[in-house]
Amino acid sequence: MNKKLAPFLILLLPFLGFEPLNEPPQWHEDLTFHYKILHQDTWLPMGFTLKLENIHSRMRMDLAWCWPPVSSGTRIPLYLYRNQILYTHGRFHPPAWSVGLAIPEVRSILTFSQKPMANLYQIIAHETTHVIFVSYWLRKNQNYPPYWLNEGLAMVEQTSQEHSKDCYWYQQISYLAGQNLFPLKTLMRLEPMKMSNVQSIQLWYMESYSLIYFLLRKHSNFYFKTFVSYLRDGRSFKTALWAGYRYTPQQLERAWFRFLNVQSRQKTFGPISKVGFFHDLGPS
Figure 1 (cartoon, rainbow, N blue to C red):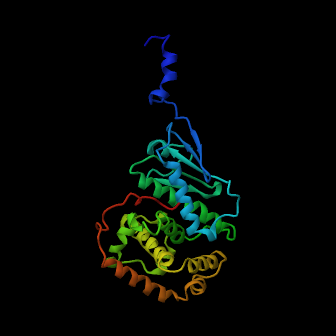
Figure 2 (cartoon, rainbow, N blue to C red):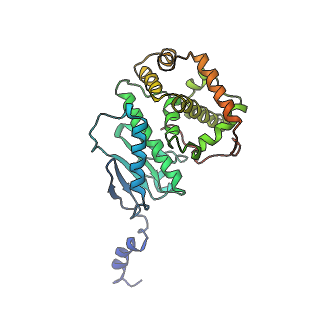
Figure 3 (cartoon, rainbow, N blue to C red):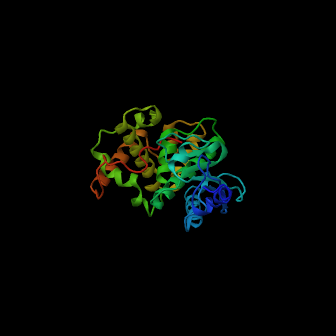
């Protein structure tokens, strides 16, 4: 290479779509009303910022009762890495299997560019739910919310109620009725990060999703709000459940299993053994 031209070529590399070797990509910043997007690609995908605001607006309508009491100008930082390798080796060091991560303590989420875009938007909605819900919980309770509640809610909020069938988890609950399911007490006690069997982990996620879907989508939003607020205040599951739904735990389990049986008669999707794009996402 001509030594005189080398400095100019290095300066041109970013404009030509290349990054200098051994140099991390620079961050670019775009702002929406509710997100501060830090991205490594020069340009965001077309329509990305509008879609983010649509997601935020939909979730705020759905979860208005747990929205943080902060000014509307407080933006959620979203770190959008160029690819999974840069994401995994970034400053936050997420697990290698992770496709998205929420850091509620600093109200931040991170993920990486990927296709199809529908998957990316569901990941962002999932992690935004963690940021909002954990912040709500910690305002009254020094402990994190239960795993089944935190993960189940984030999974349900990946899509709107009208587009639930676009979500992998919804598609798979049709097959839960034929499984050897965890009883309700066991489901609420388990922590997926401490489980080693892949099939059991996937089943735990499926059940958590289906339970929250049943409580939130098949009943009044007010019932769910009351139930969660009692749990957050440190009341027992039995007390919170009766306050919100007038169910005993036994009645809930029977009603939930009836719901799963109805879903099993509406199978239109692939078997449970097929791994969805979110299968390896552990609790944030």
